[in-house]
Structures are given as structure tokens and as C-alpha cells.
Amino acid sequence: PNPAFTTSTLSASATTSDDDGDTVSVSFAWTIDGVAAAGTDVLTDPVLRGNVVDVTATPFDGRVYGGSISTTITVANSAPSVALEVSPTAPVAGVDDLVCVVTASDPDGDTLSTSISWTVNAGPWAGASGTTNLPGDTISAADLSAGDEWNCTLTADDGSDSTTASSAVVTIGS
Image (cartoon, rainbow, N blue to C red; front, side):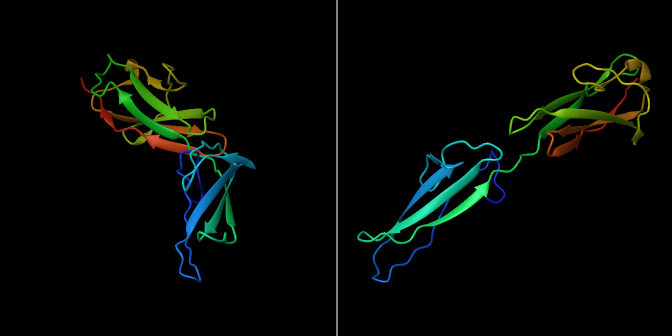
């Protein structure tokens, strides 16, 4: 694939022909940053963001090796992965705090910075928010009114790419 990511399966294929009509086999040789790597038509060694991966294909018709061809790709940054929900899913006004429960990770292992925002009744929440697990992830039960509809939005940034996701809307009960 181009671009390739740390989670990509890197594979190679080659189309061959032989003037004599012989069956042609192809061997593949992989390198990562110039160092030999394991794999046949699929690279089996792990890659990191920024690695330069090269694969060389060499044909053989049983008697003569043909000319080798190579291709190179640099492993790109993977954007963060984000999932979130508001807890509890059936909050009661004045009783339950709302918490934006976040699961965020980065396939490259980069440190993430996060920001959370809230909407109430489809408009931005301008009031205070607290911290349960992440800054801004909690709205106090005292700020909730029956019938209000709330959701949270999270942006996770790995320094190169960011991902934004929003929770489902929860309605405050009485």
C-alpha cells in the first residue's frame, strides 16, 4: 500500500515472462533502513514510522537469473484511534456527573495530547468542566437539567495527525 503505516501488511508481487517459455519463479529480498529483513512476498518483520522499506524482486527461469527490480516506501505516520461515550448513559439531573469516557491510542506509540469539549442542546457548553480521567472530561451533576441533551467531543493529536470523534447524545432524566 502507498502510503504504508505501521499497521499495514507490506507485500510484493511481480509479473514475469520468459523468451523460452520457461516457468519463472521470483524471489523477494526485503530491507528496513538498509538492514536485511524477514519475508518472502510479505514482509514479516515489524516496521516503525519513518522506516525506509525496500523490496527487490529477482526472477529465475531455472537456468538464468533475470534482472532485479526494486521499489522503496517510507512508513508514514498513523493517525490516533479514538472511541468515546458519555457515562452514565441514562443520567439523572442533580444526581449524576457526566463523564466523557475516552479510549485513545496511537498505532505508532506516540504520546497523545487530548482536548475535550461538550455540547448541550446542540450548542457549545461554556460552563466549567472537571477532571475524572482527562482534563475537561466531567460535567457536574449540578449543571444538568432534565431534558437537556449532552455529548462530548474529543480531539487526540500525536504531533503529526489528529483524530476527532463525538459521543452519542445522552438525554438528562429527572
